[in-house]
Length: 306
Image (cartoon, rainbow, N blue to C red; front, side, top):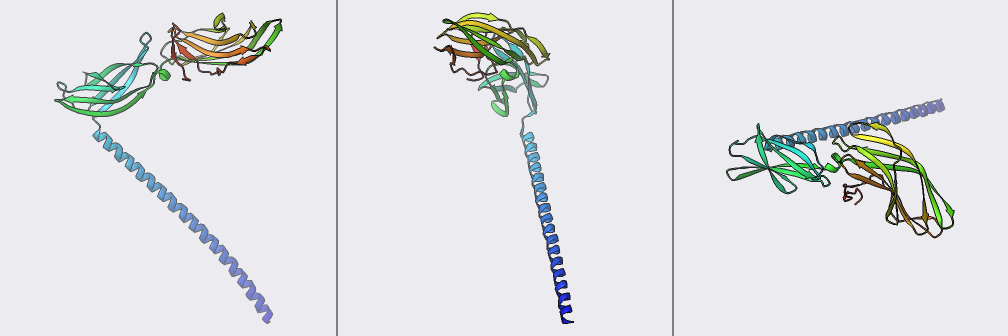
């Protein structure tokens, strides 16, 4: 009988132990849930505080802002002057039409604004190939100057000026006959021309060969226009060229694109010297898709890699 009671006590003790472990597990789970809830609440509270702080800061900035409205828009390109035209305007909250004068500060220079229908406006010509900063506007009245920060940064080159990307894929081979070497190219040429809606559509494309620095020939690849919209056009075509060289010759082959503005875009496809064994030795010019940009006289306007 005593042994039976001992067994019963052992079973009950084990059952109580299991229940304790289960309860401990539940308590730990409740603690984890409570901790997660507290963390979530803390995160939500911090987010609310940040949002309120941001709103308060914004409202304070708006209250201290001298302007009720401001902005700028593009007004085309001046190809001859190599500038982009921008229309700027600001609307002050308080001003005296007969006394208040305004200047906008661009690249460290103050440009006068003209009052028109409650707006102070200016037409500014910015250099095409440099980033410009319109940093502030100043209002002057009876010798008192008030300044409002603007922090407008404008890069006409990538927003307005056409850009050409050239992609070449294929293979080259050589054959030999005495001192003469015939070098052949077979491949595909793709051109993405971003005219960006400001004119300057692609007009022509040629493959140009220079041997020892002198132009030897120009060939026009047959290109098919696959895509065209108000921002970009896409062309693709097969190319197959061969030309004769001598050992020691330097050879440079590039794609040359001309747009309707007269600007020229060049992307080097090969730059090498023919070695004593007849093999092309690269001269160090790396192939890059985005083309350098020149004016009609051959002056470099912009290189994305300088």
